Image (cartoon, rainbow, N blue to C red; front, side, top):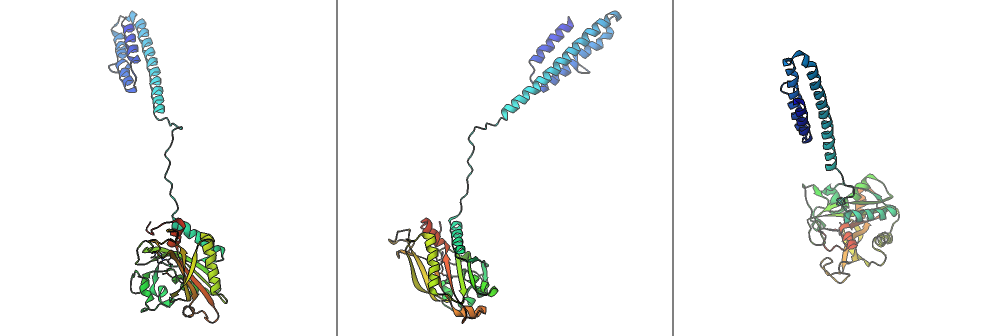
Length: 325
Ligand code: FA5
């Protein structure tokens, strides 16, 4: 009678148990080695009359086996249930729309620089580089701009020391290349340059692409043809282009090239300073004084050079009306 009550009681408690912790409490309550209710019954066997012990012992052991089995089944069921719940919680809904990652874009200057380099490589020019922190000798003196030359003022230089500057143009690369190589030469040198200069079409740091061609025969007509071929490839053949006489100490004769301002469609605006044109490059035939400085025979060799303003070209190409943008 007592066993049947215990069995029903244990079954009822197991039914309402849903956690491994609770199950452990119940195990201690019924099967625990010290205080377990069934353990207690087994210990009490010794108090029964000898002839009643086998029968009672067998009934208690059967109950113990039954309860042990029920416990183990319940444990399996609880573990399976917990696992199912965890799988459900951690389920990934593959049909859910994800986040669209923000993708960066190439900078207009990078695009235009790459385009310029490709066009000139197609015309047979090789790419050279020079340092941005430059000796004033290369930036000025070797380019026929001595200490007291007024052209130094035009450059509004950032000085690092009396003899070292942030280069104000890419022209010093001409000198470095000519010192290291003999003609024929046909190179371009893209890179950053620095000037104390700032308004809608001037930036303190900007990019230039230098060009230099030296050979035994070359003419101003070829310079014009190369620059026109470049500008047509870059802007199309209908773009208005004009060559203006100009002055650079390292070229003679010299010119500057303007492109019809696309920002105002040649009506006059702040970017072109109401002139309807935007200056994009300077160029000219290499001055024999520069050749003498690098040890080239100025009677034998003749050359032309140019320096493009990359930001100006990018502004015209993309219709950007302020260089700071
Ligand atoms: C020069 O820098 C000469 N070294 C170019 C040259 C090379 C002439 C070889 C002859 C032979 P200039 O100072 O004009 O020239 O600058 C060239 C171009 O750089 C300009 O036409 C303009 O497009 C661009 N530029 C000049 N200053 C700035 C500035 N502050 N911000 C952006 N672009 C500029």
